[in-house]
Figure 1 (cartoon, helix red, strand yellow):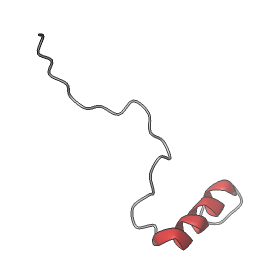
Figure 2 (cartoon, rainbow, N blue to C red):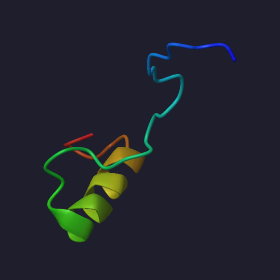
Figure 3 (tube, one colour):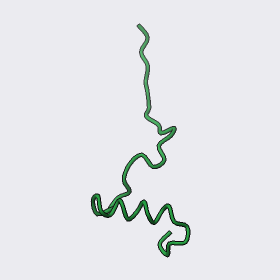
Figure 4 (cartoon, one colour):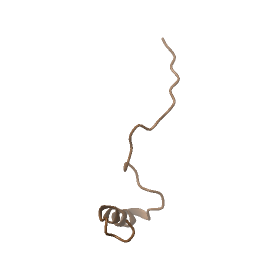
Length: 43
């Protein structure tokens, strides 16, 4: 048997989790709408 030392690294993961302080499901829905609309004031 060979022993391996594995360090974790992120190779992909954009948009796979909620941003911090999103205020739950309603806040996430608002976030997605804002993110999708380049003319939104908070975009």
